[in-house]
Length: 123
Image (cartoon, rainbow, N blue to C red):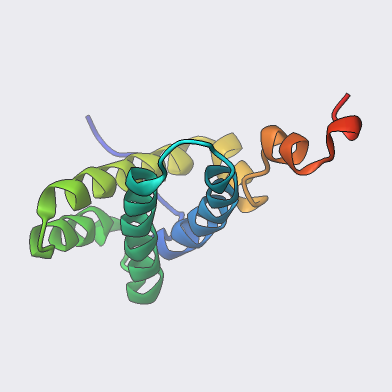
């Protein structure tokens, strides 16, 4: 299967994904269960996304850049899993204009809006 022509820069995509991650972080903190695994995974993802923004790899080199990060990690399994997730999200944003526009708009979420309002305003 051939890849579609990718024009979205990985650094631009990752900047947008970082904003979406910030929104998810706020919702994560409101959960009543143990957040340690979520926090670890989000921390790894944040570090990778920030690394992409700093390195600004070319679209054609992005997958290799992510693989290198995983292979060089002290514990490669979790990093590889998150690199795979980032690459899948990047590919989706590259071929799905709606997903890319949603990210560009700051990844707005209806549940974030509802949860940030007082109970009386949610009706």
